[in-house]
Image 1: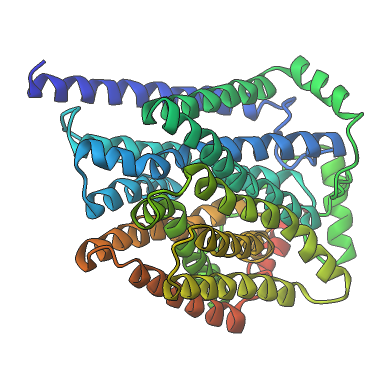
Image 2: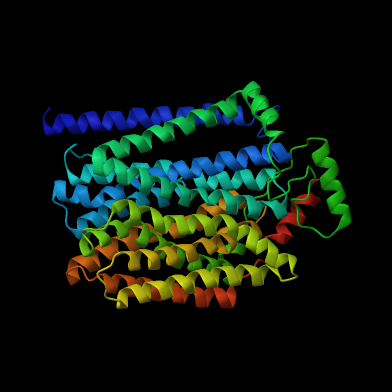
Length: 475
């Protein structure tokens, strides 16, 4: 094919794919909101349902991040094959977040007229991968918010977010082996295969009532989880007994409550919301910088280092801390500490711990690659504390608008993906691979985020008045 024909075919494929995608979403939406359906609005999950969907979302998030980690792990090999420099590698890794950030706020009007073999075609693929993955976390947050009690939302959401890091571990372990013995293309095929398997499972759970019933019956024998999910309607954080009683009666009668628009003005003008945004930005910047550039760092500075070691061990640290962080936060609350104190101590500890580790690794000089592996593992472990801090702050701010608010909130963290990762590559290109500059620059941003959130972070219901107004509409 000529270059013009390739462009024409590419455009046709993209248009057909997205027509199919959006038509599938419309069909899926019609199934999700049938009156008898599992996802009926504001129907609280039972214990068995909560366990099932927590595990399902955990696995889905795990698969999503495994596919996301494919390119950073293969970046060095691909750069050698295609002749990319550090700036080009940074652009390829960061452009994923162009599509990801846009999807968070539903702006996806993009078209590309590029040949298959160019660097820009790789950028297109990464952008559309980001577009596809961008729907996952906001939709998951919305469903968790809709179907769980207020005091269960943060625990379940924090636990499911732990799947992001387990996915990175799986990608690092399996990917390193595939990269060593087969090649980077087989790694991408593996990531696509496990994503397809989870998609089939999710479709079965959503569309087949008999399949869900079988899984629920199996779930009756599962051990009791660390969280509780009672069938009581306590999602509205109101002190007025009359409001609670009305809400409970409405839910028991399966009445769909009238929607209320998200009070964006209240959120966007409150200092605490922006403090959380700054902390989210700083923490995500540190995480994505390590997530995207660690394979290249070890390849440049420790060429004899084992890929399996530096691709897996740092992520193992964050898996453990991210899973236990919601439980740690719950224990702090059980001791009588306020939610504000708990969120602040978890997030500030996370950001300061990361910054200290990055400063240390930028100052040391050693020929043993295990030392920086341990330091980065510690930094990643501190990042896991985030799942008891800002990561679960959105249900605190707007418990009945979690999906919409989380979409906006997460778009700010996605910005760091294409700004932080790109500028890291730019710094390396301009300074002749001076990794210390990258790590110190990242550490300073984490310190700023810790200071801002430590002073202004809160759990206050920023939309409480609107929630009360919502319940009053039911009279």
